[in-house]
Image 1 (cartoon, helix red, strand yellow):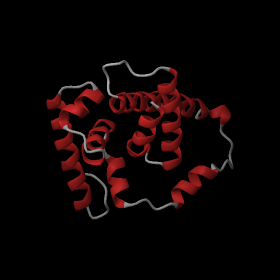
Image 2 (image 1 turned 45 degrees about the vertical axis):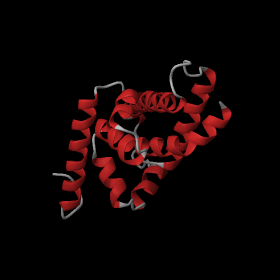
Image 3 (image 1 turned 180 degrees about the vertical axis):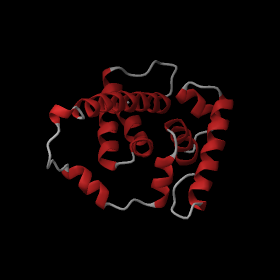
Image 4 (image 1 turned 135 degrees about the horizontal axis):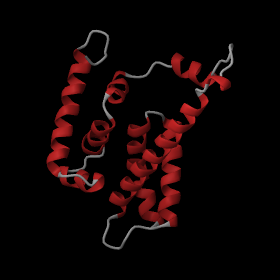
Length: 162
């Protein structure tokens, strides 16, 4: 299994980046995904790649939910300081991201997952449907909407979706 994990690592890392939009966060997500896979390996009849993508996606959802709870908790008035400066937020604001990354980030989570699996990972519609546990028709409609949104993003003068 170690050899298989090593070969799927680049694809898993690309998928994690498409979900998080940040390489450090993607690396953390991949690490947590690998830890979960090593703790509970896939069932015998499930390919490791599909299992890894499912675990990665579920880990990302878990991380997103817990971060949302922490963010809401820190927004309480008693925790706010007048001159508080978030160095990480300042640094992120200073970084100019590429247009494709901006367009991907402007998509909904569902659309970004599908376009990442199909366009970036090169999965078929049925493989992506298996990974996300949704019908193939849903994959096709999400992909069509994602592509349309990407096109409209690049047609906007300021690069933002209408």
